[in-house]
Length: 252
Image 1 (tube, rainbow, N blue to C red):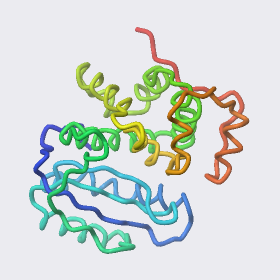
Image 2: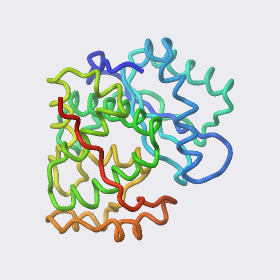
Image 3: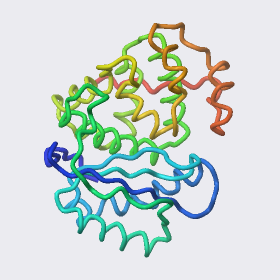
Image 4: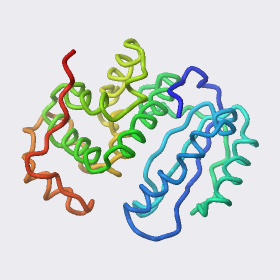
């Protein structure tokens, strides 16, 4: 799964697929669907017809919304159709056919930058999920309810895990890494969710933030304890283990 994002253009057409493994288990099916479509995302055909893509949760926390940018939509759709028919992946609603749109309008308006970030967080997020799912979920839960809530720096929280669990991140140039940190912390329109929401939504999956609760994040609040966070994440079917903490950056 390449790290290249330079092919993405703000003029590429934008479409969405709504995909699911037909087992019916909440959360489990979301992650199993991501695992099942990884060969598609890594395939030469997909990466020929699609310039970039990003993943979020869909349905009842049991399906994947695969959004994509393409300069060859007909072949992109055929590539998806062929893969899904062979791998028992169903579409739970019709695809959103590729069309021209600016998806950054509510997120600051920097279209090309936003598209590249969406693609990059997905590559890194898939690495983290594939390497250690529980750790990845703990990482984003504590980010949201400790780091972001109390306005700490994002990079120290994530960097050690990214270095150890994401080949995508490790393969980036110094310049591209700094661009990613700048993008992850970008919050151009406070009444609208921040850019980091996209990565939280993918990995958790979902977010603690709902539209009616977003005002609670507009002013800094004390970081929550692990015990308090575990009460909040109980519906997500996981717990942060006693003594868990984010991986430290290696000193070389």
